[in-house]
Length: 367
Image (cartoon, rainbow, N blue to C red; front, side):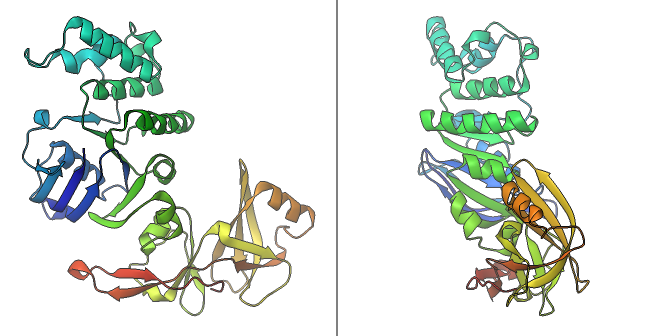
């Protein structure tokens, strides 16, 4: 089922959480709503589900107006962050619940329910725990059961609100890969909310980046990361060094540009910087302050010799070890940094409601 959001507005008091949103989601697509807390993504999801009503605008399912259709009539499956399983029911009965409470005219027979629930438990690879209770399961297992229960009623749309947010990092990584495989099997139009950039990049067909109730960018994961439409998207999708003005003074990593002229800011990601033993045109003299190796990568913090702040650089662990062993990367030793790519944005017009709109200028290799 396709979903169309047309000129949607939602306010809570003086705060606008959905500001004239327009979105088209084709049937069978898996879309991530990505943004910081307070960006409006959960409010949008709840409006699609029918749990909240917009102040204006429309929600259209497969060409039909659904804005004021009750939740029970939308054929939407909803998965919350905290599972919401019934503790007094077995896993089998939790998954069967949505089928058993249907009106008698549309309720499947007991044998049909058993067949459907068994099929779903096999789909989520948990048919062997059908007789257990939720408290006997791990967090990851409970979330998979919550997904099976949402799928039991054969929803046309599956909505997930931070579905893996309460889980530890290892389980979260395993489940998001599992969710991607599950979606490729069932092909239900799905929208999930997350503030985890890596999760959105790994799972979604498409990412909608939200900020302060508005859409900053809507595109495929590679497009959003490689070609950010605004400074906010660039800063939100990974770390970035900011260099302000013609004196090249850098701001803090992921600092806001809202108080300055975006045309005076250069953006360089830590992994897009090379370390040189000798100065070159466009390079910056620095000294090494601190290193931190996590897994396959090493993060290096350099202090500028002009006293105007720090610059973060990220290298593959092997490359860092090679430079260190060569004697180049010693604490306090002078080196030079040169970006492989610099991004700059310029304002093209004031945008809707005075909101700046940006285009990225030609990528440079000098700050």
